[in-house]
Each structure stands twice: as structure tokens, then as C-alpha cells.
Amino acid sequence: MKISLSNLWRWDGTVGRGYYCASGLLFFVLKYNLDRLLSAAMLDRPWTLFDRDQAWLYLWQTLPPPEHRPYFFALLTLSLPFLWAGVVLTLRRLRDIGWRPWWVALFFVPVLKLVFFAYLCVMPSHQRRALPPIQGGQSGWMGAFIPRSAFGSAAVALLISLASALSSVWLGTELLKNYGWALFVGLPFLTPMLAVLLYSVHERRSLGQCLLLANGVIALAGAGLLLLALEGVLCLIMAAPLAFAVASCAGLVGYYIQKTLWWPDDSERLFCMVLLAMPALMVVEYALPAPLPLIAVKSSVVVNAPPETVWRHVVSFSELSPPREVIFRCGIAYPVRAEIFGHGPGAVRHCNFSTGPFVEPIEVWDEPRLLKFSVTHNPAPLQEWTPYRHIHPPHLDNHLQSKAGQFHLVPLDGGRTLLEGTTWYYHRLWPDRYWRVWSDFIIHKIHLRVLSHVKKLSEEE
Image 1: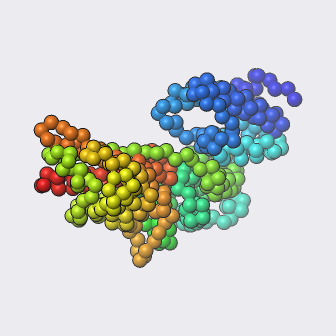
Image 2 (image 1 turned 90 degrees about the horizontal axis):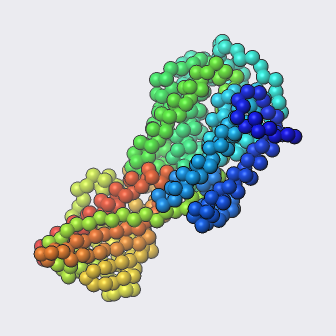
Image 3 (image 1 turned 30 degrees about the horizontal axis):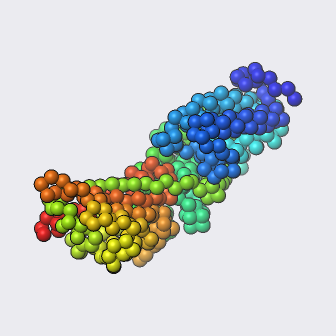
């Protein structure tokens, strides 16, 4: 089998499964070793594909930390020729098996692209049939199953999509206990797109209809999670902006897919792949968990009192007044009081929250400058709103976890003190950047509640 370089940039023609498979494996080996050389040259860190962090990068294309971005930009530049060759060969292979060119979009979907590549490597060549115009909609088993009326097809599409969404959430959260990309991005994209495609089996739908249906799936799925006691109102509200944004993108993609002339011929095939993709993504993400970044949040206030006075109210403080902040009144855990057992390093501080105590063994007792502690026990981060007496979703256990904290007192002119509070924590919720907006905001509000109370007590004294 001869591999011609001209095949790497030609759009026309076809390629057989042997040629496609051999080319793909050859490019993978070449790209893999070039990536390893680039990592060794720029980061002085050789790796293998069996390293968990690297496997996560290859499967999910995670964003780099800021200090590694020059390396990742170089990695992206190196990938462009391979990306072009892969798209060209995949388009020609799709033409060879009689599939439509828009299936090349799966080449860019993390994890699913590996299944897609394997499938193309085993599919025999097929004489491509002519592209008939849409006349009367789908005539296969899907056409018989889905009603022809607009209302009936929308109702069936919603029911199937909701069943897929709720079962996938149950699989991901209750069985795998994983709150990652598959749950917060994959599911809000695939299930609304599935609904749009089912809705358009018999006739093309307008963009407005597709977007309305896609976002309707998310709204009804949220209501279903609430009624089935799988989730509470507060967490659904926090996830809603991301879910509706992703669902709108899914509705847009589904609209353009069903708008094409060849959509009815490929609808059954795409329906099955979308239906199976969600659990597959969740299982892969569970098998390859992402590394947990340790995140720091720092807040500060200026206290009109000397450090010696402030120190006494940092180590332990009296009962705080009921919270006025909206987020605390909605169910987010908030600090109530703090007490200390012992003195100096080895003492144990309890910071009692509305949901239970944080247990904080003291590591550094540098009076009156620095009080640093680890955290060995975390209470639940919130109390869910629910129509039931009590629910306890898995994400309330160790998915948002404090690891350490400190109070730093800096003397200022005029007998004042700069009081800084820092918390180091991690969370198991992805996308990391989205959930950090919520967690950083909440922790900052907790800091300010404590620091303001210490400031008040110190200045009164």
C-alpha cells in the first residue's frame, strides 16, 4: 500500500479503509513522539501516554495552566498540519463509504473521535447513492415511530431526550459520582441536539423552533431532576447559565444539520450515535479523572486596632449575627462562630458553619502575625432547596473541599492592622473555569463575613 503525499491535501476522491487506518496510525505515532520531544525541550518533562495527566490532555484537550501556555501554543502550531491531513482523509473516507461530509465534525469531538476513527477503519467501501430531495420525510423505522404532526413529533422528541438526559445524570452522579465535562457540557449539548434531530425527521424546522425545543429540554430536565430528588434548586440555578448556553449551541447545530438535503438518509445512524455517546463519555471521564488544581482565595480588611487586639478575635470569635447576604439566606453554608481547643501549634480550631464544623488543626502559631491551619473535616457546602424533607446529592461530599487556611496580620501606621484571610481548596466540578466563578465568589463572601466580624469586635474593644 503506497501512501502518497498528495493525498494529504486533496479534497477530491476517496480512500479505502486500509489506507485510512495505516495513515491514521502513522500520523499518531509521529505526532505522539513530536509532542514528547517538544515537552522535553520546553518543559524538561518527558512523558508517556500512560501518564494520567497526559492521557487527560489527549482525550479532552483541557486548557493549560497560565505558566504552560507558551508550550501549549507551540503544541497547537505543531498540530495544524496533522489536523489538516486528518480532516482531508476523513472527508475522503466518508465519501468512500457513502456518508455525508458533515460527519467530519465528529473528528473534533473528544473521546468520541476515537470510536469514530475505529468505525471508519472497518467500514467497507460503498457505492454512494444519489442525494434525493426531501419528499415526505423519513421512511425508515424512525419515520414510523415519530408522529408527522409538529406537536406529536415535538412531544416524542422531548420524551426520548428527557429519558436519555435523566438516565445519564443518574449514571454520572449516583453511580459514577462524577461531575465533569460529560455532565455539564456533553449532556446539555447532546440531549437537546438529539431532540432537535428527532423533531425534524419528517420536515425541516425553523431556527426559532429548534432553539425553543433545545432549551425546553434543559428546563424540563431540571424539573425532572428536582422531582426525582436527584438535585436541589440551588445547584440547578448555578448550573443553568452554562446549561442553557450549551443547549442553544446544540439547537443551532441541530438546525443546520436538519437543514441539509441529505439529513433524512442519515438520521437513524446519527440518532444511535448521539444516544450512545453520553454514557460512553461519562465512563471514560470516570476512568481518567482530571488532576485537581489547588486554588487560593484571599480577602482582606483594614482594622482600626493593633495586631495584638485583632489576634484575640481571630483565634476564636463569638456568635455572628444572622446573615443578610442573599447567597447565605438561599442555603449556602455560612460561618456562625469559632472556638479553639488548646494553645499554639497542635491546638485544634473549630469554625462552626450553619451545616457543621470545619476542623482546623493549627500548624503555625506566630502570635500576633500568622495563624495557619490545615482542614481535616469539611461540612456540606450548602443546604439544598427541595420539595422533599431532605436530599443529599453526591456533590455535597468532598466535591468542594477546603484543604488549608490562614490569617495574616500586617501592622499599619496609626495602630491599624491589615487582616488577610486565605483559603486553599479544590473542587471536582468541571469545567473548572466556570465553577471557579461560583466557588471563588462564595468563599470570598465567607471571608468577608468573618473578617468584618473580627474587625467589629476588635474596634469595639
